[in-house]
Length: 161
Image (cartoon, rainbow, N blue to C red):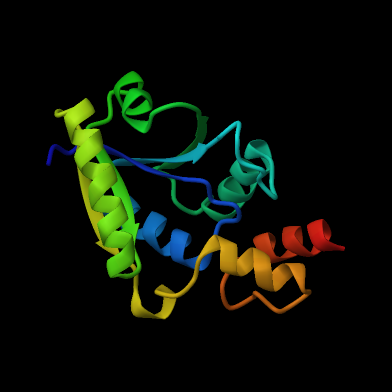
């Protein structure tokens, strides 16, 4: 790996969880620059707007000087090419994630052979956390402070009243 290697960690991050944050932190130690790319999908109804998700990620990841955020639409490999990025970082929680993520990695490799995907397994303590789980608990006014950063918890409380 060259010293100036950049990686993209992409997802919906709706909302950012402690599992996501763990992967951002670990990727920031492995790569010179990490782009946390928030996917904006026109067919999905997100709880937080793309701009709100970017603002939350910026707030939470401010301590990592080599991490930046952006919004992308379309294919991730096209976005990676536009930004001269050769590495995509993906997190794995369970074997079911692996099957799906491997399929996506193969498709990405077919579309853009110059771009590699690297899988990072989540830490055991974050293995069951997903954004959908956090949204579900928060929607019932449950305590998600163990699963999401404090600023995300505040934003969830605001969203769900």
